[in-house]
Length: 382
Ligand SMILES: Cc1ncc(COP(=O)(O)O)c(C=O)c1O
View 1 (cartoon, helix red, strand yellow):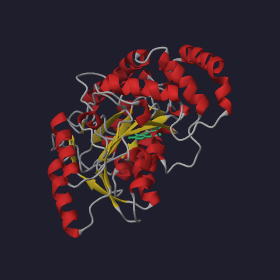
View 2: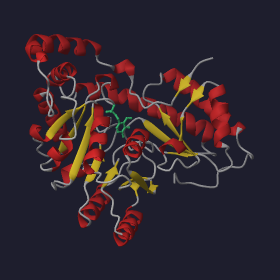
View 3: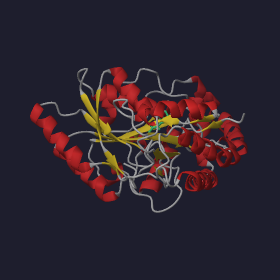
């Protein structure tokens, strides 16, 4: 039985730049082997910081100082360090989207933070609810320690926050003097349309914290990501690390890879990913148009599918898995792990043929797990 694995948020292994990476590795070893005998330190490989500053400044249209970047073991290390640095007491609150990255949920709950999820619409976190909640928390004397937001190609929903809403979020955070953490893990995985600047690019407050990654555009196995922040926030966060720095060898190879051309890989990888997204969309239109509503993300690796209320979500997981179809259940992304009628489809690493063959299998499973044949009675994603 074929396996249709839409569960894990990995990028496409088929477009990994094998030859360019080999060249970069040899060049890095020749140029830097003497440095491999040193610990990289908290800031990390200078060449990679320069390359990532160039990447961010080109994409975001601002000057980025490599001294404001710290290389991390994947962006997950930055996410965790931020929580450790900003939490004062166990039980402190952090605000996130109601549905957010499960790794962040686990990391923050794991260190003792309490997550308050803000409902979303198709443009991301809702500012009307955020505003009410901040007022309520202020009245209670329990303002959050920070706001963590996935504003671009959100995981799991695929939504992007428009510029005007980002400006509102910046204003609200400033009103309560809250650090604003923007996890732009998928920043380079862009398919179409205008790129909306990050909040880091819109606001030069030292309360802005930005997180980037090389996992989603290049490969999670390189374990490289980074933190971008201004002083004194930069030192406050980076002083929490006690690991002597990130893998210098991997950083040297990736720095060389990007030195040889910063955008070429995106230009090759992203159209292939976009095509995968389109194949999922075509399949969903053909087989589930009258039953489900889903997001059509302009970047990233995920589509978020809303089910009718009569789908038994537990049964759906078992039924789909029995047919070889795997997805991530919506509840794992809910900050309180509540059952919600959603599934996340991660299309980045699924071969095209398996996308085409897999979506009808999912549709069959969904139909088998309903109590009626009625058309859906909703038109929106949330
Ligand atoms: C929003 C978000 N942040 C962070 C990560 C962690 O990525 P990494 O540590 O590989 O950079 C992920 C991975 O799925 C993610 O989706």
